[in-house]
Image (cartoon, rainbow, N blue to C red; front, side, top):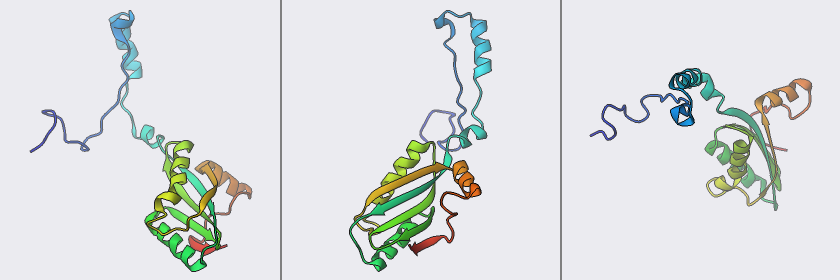
Length: 165
């Protein structure tokens, strides 16, 4: 049995087009002027509009704390890489680590918020050390590639994986 409005397609089966509607007669404008305004401003969203809604951000997250056995740190970072498949590379020592990866987000604030939650949300599942975040860098894709091309900034994340400092 299907629920919903009669004739409406099931949820998720069709894209909805968003349109802008002018204030109309209530704002004291003639109806034909309102129609002209709506035809200029009302248009369905396109694929390019949706693509611009999110961007790629290069994240570098630095954590530090009390010393932990290197073997446990490595295993925990490998588990984090398994749980969070977008991790590019992790470097570690017995008292600090650096994690680099790409995040897709609408803006810098969203990307930073997700990055700041990463360590805490995976602390128990990956058995990460109880370290605190001591650094965060969030840059857009264009800035990352510009830095690489100009020869400064972090080198490209290769080799991919978990490595000691």
